[in-house]
Image (cartoon, rainbow, N blue to C red; front, side, top):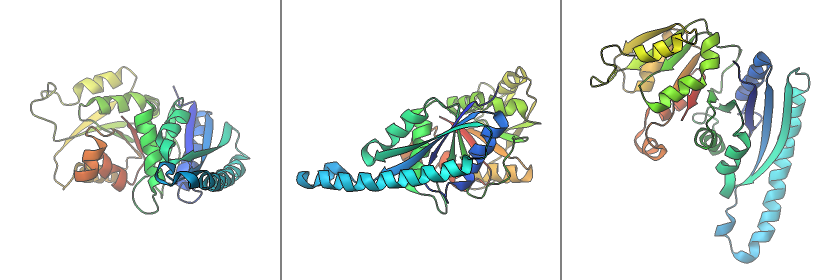
Length: 279
């Protein structure tokens, strides 16, 4: 089982380069089909401008967005020219009102959506919008690639963040193609609740599920000895040379995590290895 249809929304040649290269490497590895949507973004809110000036503004801004989309499409086509797998490149012009809904609509048939890390240096609000459109507008897994990622290949040593939540279980199911081909899989739980139905055997049920797919997984129970769960996970991943983190996304609301933080937001900002997540 592999990801046959991989989607990528290209917003900028420089800031998206590592993630775009990752999408290319994954399509080559799986002999899949890579669909690239080259985003030309019109940021004007036409419902906020005087009625008489809206048509002129719309014409000007849409023209600029089309030029940007066509430039990105030309760049992507040149980058893909010598690749042997199937691919398609499509300019996509969107205004601010329909940004996330349109992105979600065009990537909803993907087996995997690859996106750049949405927070940190060089990240833009468009990167955040693309990630959230894929996460909340589709049921597809989303691979988040750090800006300095390189030498992409098949993942051999993934780490699974398991907290018994529906989001975490969904992420594991969506990551089965990766986990089945990995050399080893590590399941990590941070301070599992003492009242859990699985408290006598933490991680036992999900390990059994994975074993029926031929996946041998080891469970590690960690204490929250650092300020955040993300800090604990990232240190563990660094110590054990994990090349992928699998996790559920936004068990709490986006608004809550934006205000007071949360594991998803922290991981998206701090992780140095790719993250495969589902909501």
